Image 1 (cartoon, one colour):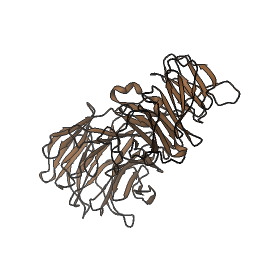
Image 2 (tube, rainbow, N blue to C red):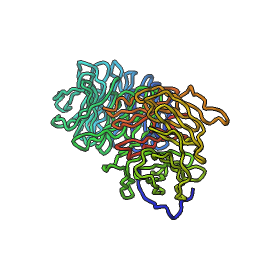
Image 3 (tube, rainbow, N blue to C red):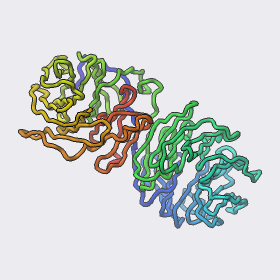
Image 4 (cartoon, one colour):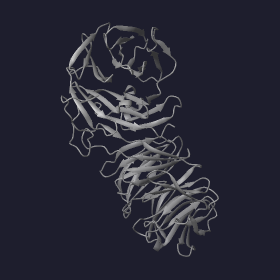
Length: 556
């Protein structure tokens, strides 16, 4: 469709990007990962270490030497020293230029759970199942100090700025240790710990009551904390390179929290892994990489919300959107079309989120409306007391009005092929021709609590409030009455009963797997549309934002 000179071109960004943009399938379970510059190292269950390009995800090298799980990886701040700890009870120093082992450190009598390199690149700290914490001289490879622990520690970390300061964590608590004094000076609740990039803070996860706590590294005072809804535990947490964000891994998900204010805010919840997330690292201030027991490594892009009520494009002026009444994802045309409560129709570029055109229609304060690009014509329908009006937006003319028993219409949609208007009432679905207004069929859905319609092509389902039972019909068979469907839409929104904690999940009907989770955002199941590799979700206060997801690397 070519936009005429009548179109007022405006700028804005209601569409937000925040999904998995790359998945790398590993030949074994990835147990650990670390990132420096544009390189990612992934420790595998096989004992190998896969070196990946941080941009493309392609494997650049495979380091072999360990004979069992590589539990932990560490790289020095200058990238010159690379260390691994393994279930085979050894620690190895690697030459990344040749891929060879420089030294193998022996001494632990149990699986090495975690390794860390001091800020002065002189010492390696390690913790093991054998209930010891060891300090190793990097130059000689000798262990020069051992501390006996009451319980096996699962994580150890040197301060990024102070080679005399480290923290380590067990399933019971987090402890701070001043290396020079050879003494533990403070103990805190928690079972995992990670330093901020400047060493001024550290984060820990406290199982009971399920809270992530940010503490001052010097005083130990709590500077921030936030709760997690978690059933199986948190395997790791980490800070972003600029220290503004914290990533944590509740259950099979990754959550990104902004800790810059006094009240930490959840930015994104990423769901795509089908098993426990074992590690997560920031590859930049705005991207994270996760590895999981499902044998995959996933790359995620962080979407930063606007401080205004409406998300705006960073290079344009703010666009104050009116509350959205309806939206249509037309992935084949590369657009999303919205209509608002003021009767304004907008066309948005699917990839950039920039508004390409804005049209005023006569439908101000309409209770129900829908818009679609059909055969290169922008058609808008809205419900009024006397029926459904069909309006040609570009020609600025009313085509006709659809009459019929349309009392108490609860929802109205245009079919995916653009040929029909479907109206949901308390007991019926009326299907009419969008071009002639002729009533083509009426079916009784027998769902008094039917709230909305979900449309996929010529197929339509009735969604019943709080129910997970979907009834549907196919209206697309020529010269035949509607055919009752036994299947459900390919994607649906579930767990909306949890609106009080703001949690909704998009599920794949075929597998039941959660493919995306929205924390802090409640939306309606009918406001999820899919097309090709894209999924669009309308959410937020009075539907002021549309989230666009690219699932090209989630579904094979």
